Image (cartoon, rainbow, N blue to C red; front, side, top):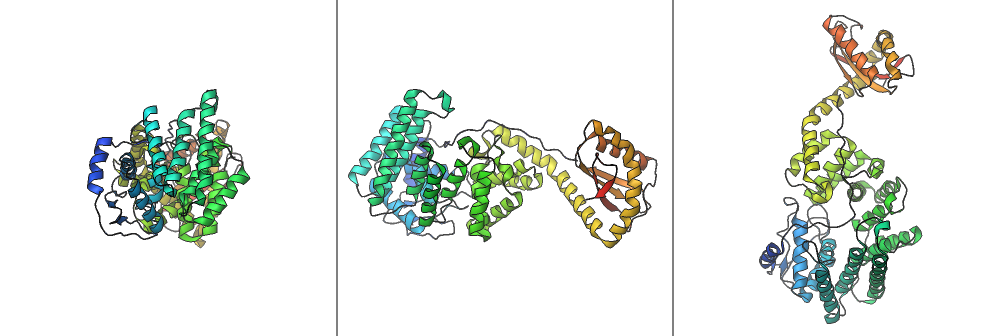
Length: 487
């Protein structure tokens, strides 16, 4: 019998944590600013290297460095600080044209814009914000036909608005905070409304508008219409689906299970491996190190398929492994969690686990529990196979009668806990009990375990000789009934 250790930490609102210092980002930037031939291919992780842009992102390897994407975002932010506006436009044009992704499937274009949506790295002051907004305003003025600049400005106004509002509960926000928040969100909407008239169309325009829709609390029909328009423009941009699913969570006004049902419907429409990949990526946005119950509505077997398909198509990625590990913990599947933690090593993602303490406690739990859980599953499978065989069906007639006699005295303890459970018994060649295994430690189960142990010590033979030995039998015990039935 194994029990899952449940621990939790408070859930936090969507903000990015960056750990790379500005000095090191500047040093890395000098290494990356060089010209090489452009290479990119949709559907595979691929460095975008452009001689015309003089920039390479090949150094950012998400398969080996959990901070690779954060570092990439910081380097993009450094280009803005250096007023490399033409270069930023060039990079964005290349990312749009190639649809390039990091290993693991993350679009480089989305992370390019994240690098521009607020002052980074670190925790920006109001002076940092003013300087950041002035830089992007300057970009839009010097290059008025840049859709990239307009979208970056709109997304910055959204984040600037959240900076004024704060990340606390709505009741804790001041009147002035709400007013500034509303003003900045409306400014972002106005920028985006004008942006479609520009010659260049950009995938991330819809993300920026989704950010506005959340801040302005659009109703469901309006946000759904925006999603449909976004998918029609670029059906493979997973962030549209992820954002929409996140907004269906109860904390944003949705009902329990809404996000999971949306993920399932979206994945089913796409179907195949790509549908499973989308299902996993949507769930990665929903799962968290908190008491959010939504994850329980997702299909754990399909999430595992989605992770495997994602790695097969786009390559390994440490953030995806971290998310798989978190999902396995939530599902109580330590057999899957253990190898995921082995892959993670010390490259744990703060956005996933929040604290190193919680990460390490679950890592240790997986290491100590996975073998026992694997044994339990193997035993259950063997018992199920035995029960389906012709000889197993025949054997159960006499076994059930004798098991009922052992079970009956233990049912008296059902007053303490009437929960149902599965009980597995390994019968030796002469009918003795060689082992027993319970799935739920109720007083009834503990009574049965003691009865089996006492009979084993006394070398009793309570059951008929089985078709083969050892022979595992699975019994479903329902204390509300006076009989047993094979699972």
